[in-house]
Image 1 (cartoon, rainbow, N blue to C red):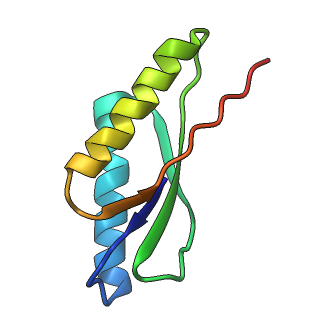
Image 2 (spheres, rainbow, N blue to C red):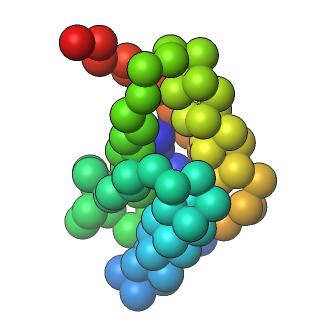
Length: 88
């Protein structure tokens, strides 16, 4: 998931948004979330979320809800989201 942070001019401002997104998503959905890219870019944040389960529909539903939740937070603009399922 990629977020654009328009108007952000400092690393401190970006860290505030990133920390908020990670903490709120982890708390609400009990899933793993991490910032994985664009760490030196002030107006962009790239996240990965991970869910483990045995039902594809449930996993997709949780990830969709988490993405919609982040978008509804209105702290940044969602510019890209992609879901990859890895089956074993």
